[in-house]
Amino acid sequence: AVDGAHRMRRLILDLLAYSRIEKTGNEHETVDFNQLLAEIKLTFEPEIKKLKAEVTGDSLPVVRGPSSFYFLLLQNLIGNALKYTKPGVPPQIHLGVEDCQREWQFHLKDNGIGIDPAYFEKIFVLFQRLHHREAYEGTGIGLAIVKKIVTNLGGSIWVASNPGDGTVFYFTLPKNDSPEEGQPLLRT
Ligand code: ATP
Ligand code: MG
Image (cartoon, rainbow, N blue to C red; front, top):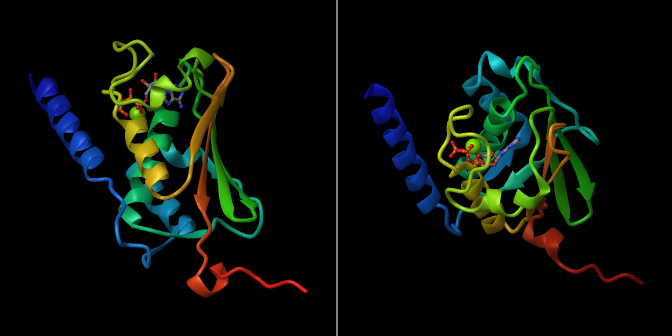
């Protein structure tokens, strides 16, 4: 009964978080991904010791938008990577980012059970799950939250996987350009 109450509480809180994601006027708030990652790691102690942030370039970027969005985004993706593991195989997670001119392209790679390509679209839909309910607990809200956040921030998200051999989630985020820098350049 305690377990059921706990699950119901999680469900309600997750749905609330989902419903609260909207385009906000918070564009002046900036978020440093390095700091964000450090904070998220604390919420996953001690499993998270395995997480390596491999970075292309100097460091993870600073982006614009509400910090609560970025926190939920990374927390859900990393939470899944730590949950959908193969029995007896310790999780390994890599977070990377590439500079793609007008946007950052992130990838979060795990060594877990993988996802059948037939489900690549469905997993982002509210309440859609595919792995055995008994083996992996969840309600199917996490990736719907993630997709709604990325979309509202002006980015996109997709997934690649070989079933049984890990998953990579890709997502893009627009660059943290100041309005001046965003002006078109006149080239001569
Ligand atoms: P919740 O996140 O709400 O607790 P959940 O983890 O089941 O529940 P989502 O995070 O939305 O829901 O994920 C949807 C489904 O996608 C999962 O049930 C799982 O089958 C699959 N999935 C998500 N991430 C991974 C991953 N890293 N590896 C393998 N399967 C995954
Ligand atoms: Mg999840």
